[in-house]
Amino acid sequence: MDQAIPLTALVERATSAFQKRFGRPARYVVAAPGRVNLIGEHIDYNDGLVLPMAIDRYTVLAGDLAEGESACVYSRLMDEQHIIPLASGDVTGLPVWTRYLRGVFDAYREEGIYPKAFDAVVDSTVPLGGGLSSSAALEVATATLIETITGQSVTPVRKALLCQQAEHRSAGVPCGIMDQFSSVLCQAGHLMLLDCRSQETTMVPMTDPSIEVLIINSNVKHELTGGEYAKRRAQCEAAAQALRVPTLREASLAMLEEKKSELDALLYRRARHVITEINRTTATAAAIEAGRWADVGELMAASHASLRDDYEVSCPELDILVAAASELGIEQGLLGSRMTGGGFGGCTVSLVKTEATTKVAKEICKRYRRQTGVTAIAFATPPAQGATVLVSNRS
Ligand code: GLA
Image (spheres, helix red, strand yellow):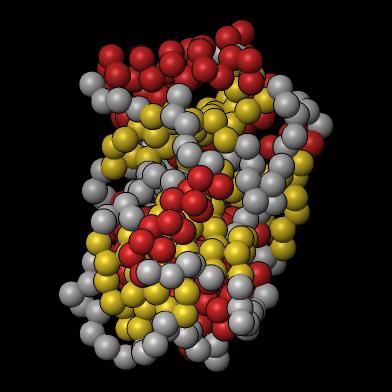
């Protein structure tokens, strides 16, 4: 099992790196978590319901105000430092990670909040490119730092939306609102039921000490992600249009069956995933509140099958991890498992009995390695707290 360094140690690492590099103490330290989605996959951009939680893996920015018109940021993970212009100025030569910061600067400026020049160290325990929203964590940390050093802030919902805009512009992926909402708004000890149409959140307590969330990173990433994601989104829009509803949130299974003959077979399957997944998400939140864990497990299995067969965003590696988990089953402490995030690699999320976590994780990783030759990485996480300001010494 992978043990991430705790947030306090991560902060210590970032602040001492700042002191060493910039020769003065960091006056501001902020943290934003990654997220895992328990259920409701490829649903946010269809205006439906999703059920993510923040994980106790964070991106931290430790910094101080500086002179000039730019941010000077050292990434501890990349071991590189770059000057990122706050506004105008060429960024084409800069590496991808700096574009997330710049995207947030742009979004805040357009909102009337002018980022000030700063120096900072960025450090993180969110696995990069593993489908746990490392980019959202960086965007939300950046937004939190801007709000802290300017003393001006927007509402948490607006903050998440500005970070989503930054993602659209920086990565060119038309993502939904789930990742940035999770990193801003999640609360420790809770899953967040997010209605992506109304943007309202309901916190679902997840505090039963006998149940744990286990994340297993397949450590593969198939290179289709960006293009396939945009394609799925377009297919959902086409299906909604054919069903004559504004979004698939407004469609029902009965309506879909009635119009089946008018619908292209592929669009039918895409829509079936979305409609059934929204129902599964509502049902999962209710089952968790009632402690009906066997039902939760079945809903997670059905979600995975639907993503694999109807939505076609899984991959052999994720299917192997989920199959290994379901072979273990409830008897061995495995309550449910499915792929999580955009797909085509990345992670699975499982619910396990706490007493069995280590054993179950070891066994799944062993079977995975035997079948794929790849080493997966497993870790358990409690539902963590959204973005926080840890140090703010404004003078
Ligand atoms: C990515 C996107 C999210 C969401 C998921 C799939 O993580 O950034 O907005 O669509 O995929 O559920």
